[in-house]
Length: 260
Ligand SMILES: Nc1ncnc2c1ncn2[C@@H]1O[C@H](COP(=O)(O)OP(=O)(O)O)[C@@H](O)[C@H]1O
Ligand SMILES: [Mg+2]
Picture 1 (cartoon, rainbow, N blue to C red):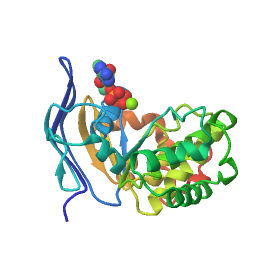
Picture 2: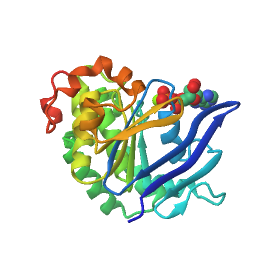
Picture 3: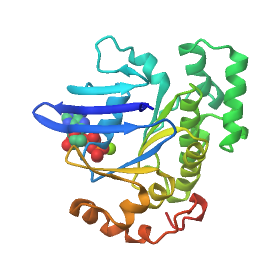
Picture 4: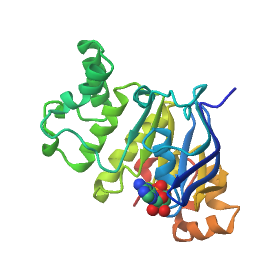
């Protein structure tokens, strides 16, 4: 079976600085990949290239059988297949939650209002926010807004979701409610690429950890290997301050993580 996403010899520069260096990464359908590594190692840039927010410079990036680095790539269309959620949620402040959710499906995808609305309401129920349908973003907590931002992306029916530090700006008590939504998607078999600093979550949710440093992938392993027996000195050093994660049982669920 061919991979859903495949980076091959992928390079990205900002001016003279090479921020992604010979990236080779395959992601299969239904796989949950967590990308870890020190600040500035290129994690966000990798996700942004996959979403067309950065221009790649060389190599190959295949998605669902298509070469995305070809000039003719319609990124607007690809972004409907590859949803991305960031640290800041960017909901439209003057629009109610439901209208925020329906904007993409109606304006971009030209879908039937009733069908799109049924889907949006079902997804709202799934993240426990049905009662916020007619609220404005400012009436919601940060954790609620981030869950709405995830739902907004899901309303486009993407094949893959990218999460870039989606809990980094949240108060600690709101982190868990957002991570639970992501873990729910993972359990349902959605393909996910996640950048996070929540190590216990990474261990619980990932099928594979991709560890980066200095623009390169240094190590790729299942979490039980990565967290208990990292193969490189760099990964060992990175994990030193997270030693409690190695001691967690393999079946840990988000709601059991105390404290995250
Ligand atoms: N728009 C940009 N212009 C110039 N340099 C950038 C830009 N975005 C990121 N960088 C640089 O690229 C490197 C990787 O950044 P980033 O992908 O954000 O790392 P991470 O997400 O792992 O912290 C860093 O050295 C950062 O300073
Ligand atoms: Mg980043």
